[in-house]
Image (tube, rainbow, N blue to C red; front, side):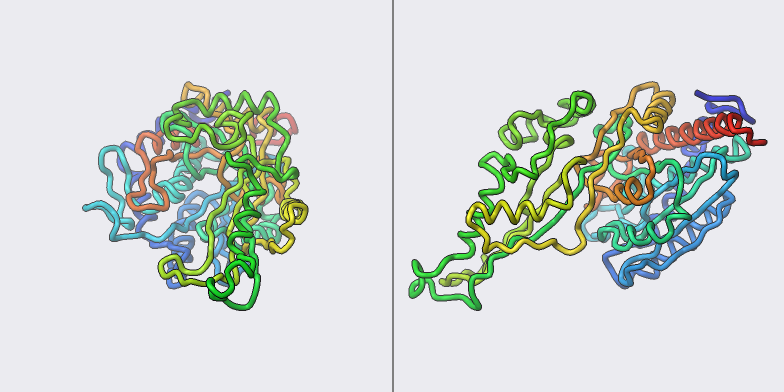
Length: 476
């Protein structure tokens, strides 16, 4: 795959390895982690801007990027940065995405000697808030870009970088922002890193994610509680009605009963991909409930190739201080995770039709805030997907896990649907990284391999740019 061009692919990978082994990556990551970018705290807004202005923009400027920081379209959300280095409009263009905000530090709950705002390396783990999610991961991409430019003298492709500061609160404003600035974010492919690999010692290429919609089911029976002795047996109990309504959505093993929520079973090609990346080392048979979920599917297919319904919270009275009364109102906060091919526009209407047919038309179904994310899945036969898989395999010497879509959800639909990009996700963390919890960490081995993978991929993209330029007569 590599071509000779002012150096070599292997030399560039050797250079990024030397950067890591000299402590450069740890030092650079420490400067990012020290900025307390907790997007949940309004008082941290200054830190969100500081992170972009004094750290990311400065790093990109040193690489020949022009950057601009924008206020979020949602007034209460954090800023966004667009950086761009355009070498030739006729070359391929990659968009890199990441987020610089983190969840709250939870300082008092970290192990002794550890702090969320200070990088500590211990037993092969790089501790600090954001090391895995997502500061360490987008730093890997930026340093890989730097290495290719240093080795080759240029990238050999065009590059745009988008860093947001509100991902941990659901990316408010991101979709509207991307639609408004689509001309400045246009490209051929998204190459981004977030979330964990399936296993720590094998790279993964992720091609999409399940969608997610969160909604409330509410029964409001009357304007106040009634004494359960004086009114018991005479008034409908909204909690009992709601529980029975919920019981019509799935059967006893959690199999979905709403017809429109049941997707087409995975194709043979998708089944093969799922089988290859969800073996017992990923889905430990002792850690899952074998008799839960769609009976005809394997555990991996239930996770990556099917829809799943969950009740996230139930609200009725005060369990800590129950009173002898029939409550007037009951509410359930629910979620559907869904794969590409599900008619997302019909999810809530279908539920309303289903509940009405079951005799529960008194249940109000409402979208819960702005918590809708569409499902995406790039075909593994797509040219960009095959190219990325081959690049990772060349760097690591091992075929990566090819994950058709995450079981969880990332804002990939914005890049795939709104911007029309092929989307490639290369996670550089692992399931035990403790993201969102005390003692968050990035593994040294995974960080180093991630640096090599991204350097190799950006080198290969420069080679691809040269081939495309030659084919179109572009002069270099």
